[in-house]
Amino acid sequence: MKNTIAGIHHITAIAGNAQRNYDFYTKVLGLRLVKRTVNFDDPGTYHFYYGNEKGAPGTILTFFPWEGIVGGRPGTGMATEIGYSVPKDSLEFWVQRLKQHNVQQSPLIQRFGETVLPFQDPDGLNIDLIVPQQPDTRQPWVTPGVNADAATKGFHSVTLTLKSIKPTAAILTDVFGYELKEQEGDRYRFVSAAAVSPSTASSSTASPSTASSATASSSSASSASAPASIVDLVEAPQGTRGLNGGGTNHHVAFRVPNEEIQMEFREKILSRGLHITPKINRDYFYSLYFREPGGVLFELATDNPGFTVDEPLNQLGTHLQLPEQYQSSREKIEKSLPALNV
Image (tube, rainbow, N blue to C red):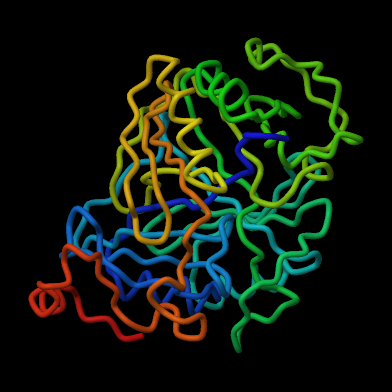
């Protein structure tokens, strides 16, 4: 479908100790560090990007590891869960692996017909490993400890918790081109229309503008959608407002193919009376930022140019890369950054 958001580009979260973050995501979860750089606004802080071999959109989890940061509080007005897609029959492996590494995990649950393993990273960030109803064909990054039969494939979904879902749902449906597919209790599942097969899309029994009264569809969003195309909205009218800090999500970035389409979306967002930034060059993609009505910070990020602009594919993440404006201060920045054993 023309000019609809295809899904999640990346998700950015906040961590504490950089070494602990690196060790967990590369050695326990088995992700690839595809880029080691610094925060554009705080060059004394790392910015880590984890993903598959290439750091493809839909696989990229990024962190600002601020040493000594106070822990945050998940709550309304923020992204509260990150869902990763994993292969069928892999969850027992993950239960045992997380237990082996003393990772706090919860019992398996069922959600929209899929099995979910919830756990928390060392900073308390909420992550779900999810076996999708249809196999995820993306090629994972594999390590000696996590082989292809268990490795994460990239994002399955992201969950936003909101006082009321209606204003956010309107952005997803009217601007981004998502469709409301299913409901379970206070959780509403939206899927990018660009990723939905016309032959399997439901006949819109639930209007996005009346999402609070929608009934669950009998069709499966997962069976009709591409990877990283799902956004779950959880409505919590009495919920406590979230507080950013260690172990919370900073923002969610949605995927656009190029800058031309990105700017078309900028006009759509402006027309709804929302403030949105000018285009910002983030070296590996171009970005726009705005805060949707429910309070979550959204980003629109381009597929281009990707992570090989300053390192070859086989060396991704092996060198500290700096934005151009900080190149002249490399020696000072390297001394100020925490020691990192990679």
